[in-house]
Length: 281
Image (cartoon, rainbow, N blue to C red; front, top):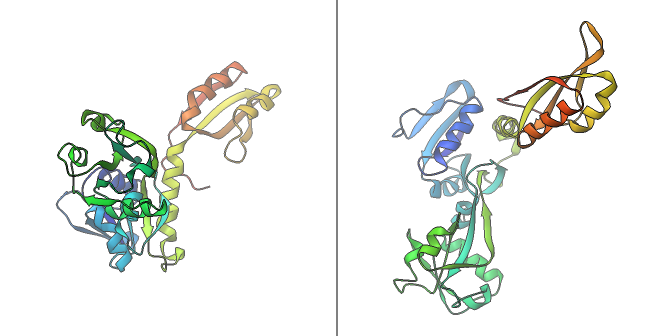
């Protein structure tokens, strides 16, 4: 059986389980359940701390796992990114009191507090900067006020928490992270091909809707410019109306409303947008 590690808690936990459910896999109902066997799909799921998943994958204890890119890079484990999963987006940045530190070069000789000591040490080293990295398990934003550090490196969403602590973001992002599927470098892609195909089919489906519409044949070329589709629209004669055509096409979800407006303006009617559960292309 393929052994898959899934986050047992935190921001990645429920989206990861929902993605696997949508891909046709069983998932636990009891949040205290630590393992689950899905015999029909020949997989076993193990619910682990997100920070530990890359370590288990790297050690070969499990075959693949879902974790954050930041956690993978911070772990130092022998695991590699296999597939982006489209959720759990975050940005990792430096912050310090205003006018105290304004560039990464200013961190030389200073103390930087973070929960991601390996990741930050490697980032500073890549710039040739010698600084003391102070590892904390949480509440990093208070480190400067409490005199533990001169600057911090942390996950940033809006920056409101850092500003409330009297800190200002500086420099380019250290890392843009999201949830990813990880595997060992020596694990052949064929071993995870079914899982990868299923996950990709759900991820693609989440990006598109299926749009059907009727259009006069004389306006078909205009409509095709508006809806070129993933490869090309499917066009069929409309029964009982020889001058009309029925069109079926994939449309980016984010563009759906604008596309429907444009189609109507060129004469399309009976425009229907349908949610997709999975889509293999």
